[in-house]
Image (tube, rainbow, N blue to C red):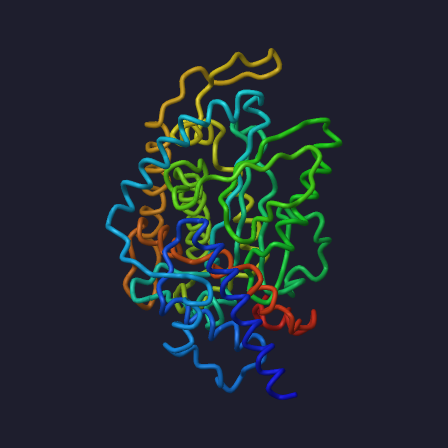
Length: 402
């Protein structure tokens, strides 16, 4: 009986690892032997092997490779060339993809990690533990932004934290907040939250009698099998969103520049002769309103121009109900972003912290590498969230000062 249980356990690990491996390779993500072994150990632990009995040894790897006919080869240093070809092919195809949609009905959404309390201290270092479970992870939100091509419909930002209801909003109707608030124990986007958001968006479009095209990256949390009536999903090619996704063309960066300017101004306004930035209280409600105000600060012209930078061009005549600025210039995006950075640099000169103040550019970019979702796969994220914390525990874990 024990032998059968062990065999079933090993088979479950093998099946899970192989399914994940296939998913990653379909996205052209290179997977090495050590990466496979590490992922297998992670799966084993999540299936109950807390003592580490499953080693994912080299012998296991050899058997896995033989069973599934997997072989490893050196991937030539031509990734940039592949991305360039993928991007060029995409931009050739794009006019046909969007030809039946008015720009007002073409949208893009994307997530980003945000350390909402982070002060501009040059001595700070963010590592992976800060994202997954370290002390700073409780000060991290995942923010998803979504807008249409014309910038005329910037949807409420989605904000994902750890607490179902942070203490500072306990007496506030969550539905009346300027953001859509979600929570889980990792503060990451997952397929459950994203699917729920998609269904809500679809209902809105049904009521407005609109059919929209939503562009998004092919992250594991972005479900592709959702049945929607008025929203059509179009996924960008893997590993090329930095070049072809509008929100990656400086919109998110400009949003963060605005956010951090609000943060620094708050610190300056609340610090006195005996306090530094380290002592100023920043609540979840502060962050929520700064996220909303920062998103509102992104102009329609900036959004239109970033869509153009990503390859979205007007190839058809708009109907009379839609007006659009005739001149779209990518230079305007750079000018607008530079002004945001310059403004942030100015306010940074007036802040007092215990360490050395970093530059505005470094401050804006500091959480660029923070993953907004589980980068291994969404199934793993689901397993991680099986042990649900209570609402009270979650509120306490978010921050005792909120």
